[in-house]
Every structure is written in structure tokens, then in C-alpha cells.
Image (tube, rainbow, N blue to C red; front, top):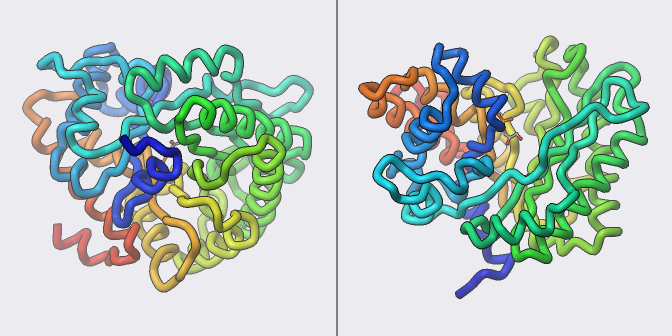
Length: 341
Ligand code: 13P
């Protein structure tokens, strides 16, 4: 059985495939369901996620792995099959979000520290036994005139590195996710400021990963793109792509096998266009792809609307977006393909 961290990581960023982030916490999925007027229950969460995971064409041709919330990792489909087996049957790798959320950081007003290290070694063993072969931990960095502070960046980078070490010891590939928010408060920063903060954050994250003896070959980086704040969107698609590549080249060692971007509040089409422009025409040392939550799911959620009779429509919407993102991951997405569909 080939279960080396390097092989799992390579499968996660296989050419033209990417990750489906379906790991919304119970609170977050509740907010998403509110937008379609649906009550969030264990069953409605299962039905929604089962709809996505059973979109066979999308799963088999576009999705390399799925990030699950703990509840889903142990959940069964309506017919009694475990959802982990549904994912595996499609040839994708099951993964698990293991942080317990970004909490206000004591003495650092406006900043957060991500929690979840206590007892993590034991939890990882349970998740491995349940089939998870990769994990995710998200550190959150907010931009304002005075933020982020050095203290908060360092603390979040250290937590990411401790988490990554525990994962690698457990035979699980860590997705290291330092998200620089595009939609924080006030959310009106320029792309230059996004660049400056992202460069600093990535430098410190890789310093801490080195101190923690992380094998770079057995991890995946999940960064945000270099992009202007959500209330100040001015940069062109090519500007976002160029600045993102520039910052990654300056900070991410080539031993890292893959980089899978988060969508972070970009619209579905923006996130697709940006990824395609990042990948097109560049020879880069890492596999590059998507690890989208909102950008992969938004259209499917709306088309489904919580109604059993709309499952086929929800799956069509998910398949379309998965195909567009898959094309983007090869640099081959074009706007007219959106219309053609
Ligand atoms: P978004 O693509 O919606 O940002 O979600 C990705 C993710 O996993 C955030 O942690």
C-alpha cells in the first residue's frame, strides 16, 4: 500500500484536479443554509453534502480530495454507506478539518489565534482510523492600517507548525492554511498591502515549519491570493495572478509539492478566472490547484435550495463549477465556456 505522505500530497494536486472544501463548521453551514431558508440539522447537512459527494462525474474527473468537518467523517449516506466510502469510491482522498476555530487572541485586539492543539495527537489517530489521509488547519490574518501585529502572525505560524508536526507523525498530510483575509475589517486595503502582508506571513510560516522539522515534501500550502480588499476591488485578473505568483516564488520552497488556493469570498467566476491566470503560461515548481469552499459550492447550494426534487439541478451546478475550476487548474479556462454551459 502506498501511503507515503509524498504520494498522498501528489495525489491531492494531481493535474487538473483540486480539493472540495466541505468542512464548514456547524455554525458556518447554518449561515449558508439560512441563505436558502433551510434549517440546519444533522440530516439536512448530510443530505446536502451527500448530494455533492455523489456528483460522480465531478468527483471522478475534477476532485482529488474532500475536506470534511468531523461530523461528516463519521456520517452515513441515506443508504447506509459511509460518506468516506462514497469519496473513496470516486477515487478521491478524504480529509478532515482539525482546528477548532479562530478565537479572539488575548491582548491582541482585533486579531485571532486558531485553537485545537490540545489532544490533537489522539484525535488524529481516530481520524486516520476513520480514513482521513490529510488534514486542514486555518490561521486567520486580518489587515487594517495597524494589523496584523508581529505577535499574532508569529503565534498563528507556530500553531500551524505544531499542528503540521502532529499530522506528519500520524501519517496525515497537513494542509497549512494561513489565510490573509480579503473581507476583514475594514476590508478596503490595496493589493500592495495584501502583497506586503502575505509576503511577511509566508516567510514567518516557513520559518516556523523549518523550526518544527516539518518535511516540506509531505505538506500542502493553502494560501489566499494577493488581492485587494473586498470593499476596494480594482486590480485586474492578471494583476492578481502576477502578484500572487511573485509572492509565492519569493517565499515558498520548491520542495513543497503543491499549493491549493482558498477562494476567500471571491465570486465563483472570479476565483476560477484568477486560478486560470495564475496557472497559464508559467512554469512553477509546485502543483497548483483549488481548494475552494464557497466558490465551488455557492451555485450548487442555490440550485438545490434544500429541496429533494432539486438534487439533479444542484449536482448539475456543482459539476459545472467543478469542471470550470478543473480547467482553470490547467490554465485552460475561458469566459465563453461559462456561457456555453
Ligand atoms: P473558501 O474557498 O470559501 O475560502 O473556503 C476554503 C476554506 O477551506 C477556508 O478555510
